[in-house]
Length: 94
Image (cartoon, rainbow, N blue to C red; front, top):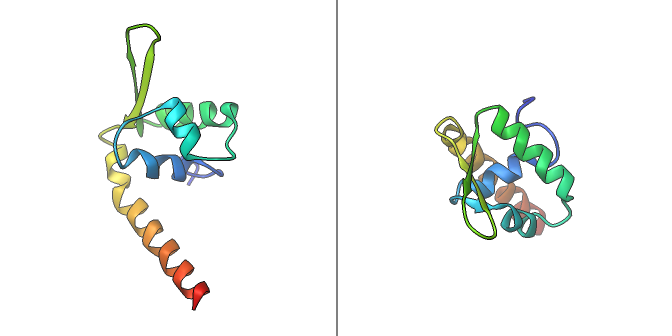
């Protein structure tokens, strides 16, 4: 829970389940997150070994984030949370 705790980390992982994303893509996908929070949460997920950061040389430098091999094990957790969220939404609408 320490690794995925916090306001944004599980949400960030859920976006990375779909494939690698660049920093600004994640920022657009998660409205309301500050650049600092995004940076700190990505660093924490990387330090925990769940996210892999890849720097591609070029101008400008391109940085991509993707789930690591250990991070891929979170797929069932993310799927369960998504299913639960959709169930809650449908229940509230009924």
